[in-house]
Length: 185
Image 1 (cartoon, one colour):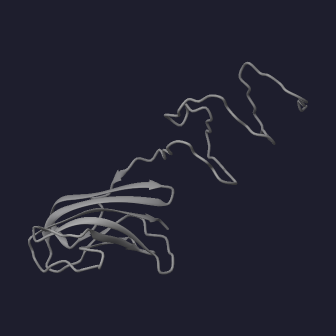
Image 2 (spheres, helix red, strand yellow):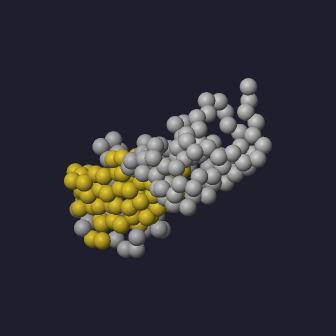
Image 3 (cartoon, helix red, strand yellow):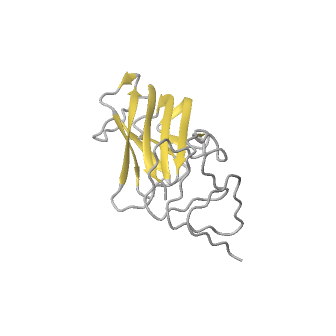
């Protein structure tokens, strides 16, 4: 038998609802505590969250998925004898934030590339661009380098500048570090 309340109702204890609750007005809470886990905020859900329209978030969004190290699995081309091979990835939904750092020896004239676990979303003529700081034959390269991942690819290309210039034919020390963001397929 349903409970119909016309007008205001005050409940001073807990209210447990085992079925669905439909609210036609605004559902609000006066608790202003920050959430620090998935179970301590003023509004908690043991399942997902479905929102049909815009969401306005006044603070930070925490995904619960930590940044992870992918360097051991990434295939690096153009730098050999790696003393540093770091590829850190943070996934937020389908968005990927990739930071990388490689130090080793140049592979004569070979382009510098590395792989990431998720291919970029397929979008016609789309290229995701980032930035890098590079050394080639022990010399700092200026201006900043360009990093890109093409649509539907899981290979990241590192160029010596934004004109997509080639690396030298030197076999001296070579390093590349930078950042690229992209949407995964």
